Image 1 (cartoon, rainbow, N blue to C red):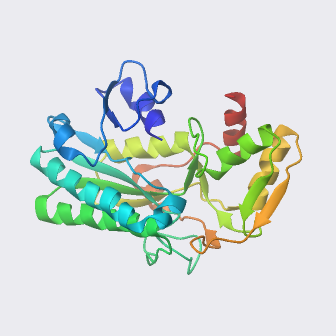
Image 2: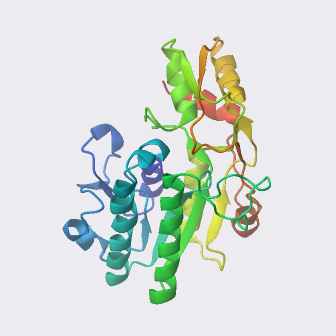
Length: 287
């Protein structure tokens, strides 16, 4: 998401990027990059001077690794963010935009689609950490007047996503391209909401540039697809047959998660443009 966001912002703005990795492929030509761990705030907080908007996309875990090291999740992502928030207030950053996780903060759906008023009952360490960060951002707003916007994203997929452990659509595509068996936790009937990174970036830019009394929004495609349907759609686009191995479901995976995104549409006029089929095709065309 970071590289896509920088590409969209860079043409009209001065962009400074912080990245823990020294990887040329992750960078956008002409953008100022600094290699720091975001938790090492003393080393880079000087970069916050004269900053209008801070997009906080940094995170050291995903739903799998978070559950494997919960103290590490708290130390790096929650405590690291709180220290960053202190620096943000200190240096007078005008606005913070945080992409949270609509797929994990709500837990098991009491009703669908899930709107922003749905209770937050995360069943994973990852979701609990995202929710904790949301709450601390709201605390800093109340205590220090920090302006912010929180976007609870559905499952984001698309260009530049190369993770081996997160991003089902991109992982499935790579597995099919290499004729590997796809491993699925559970029976493949779990339903999720998927949003292409191009649409996700559009929402991030709107959240940064425009102000509104509402500060928290769901961002998704407004449609749900089962894992089996996603695999079938990808296989159809590639004209291939998928081999699937179903294994025991993980305790932190919910049965259904589809977001109600009517609030961000009514406030910002945001409506996702990229269909699932178009998104899959665009990934294939870029390979």
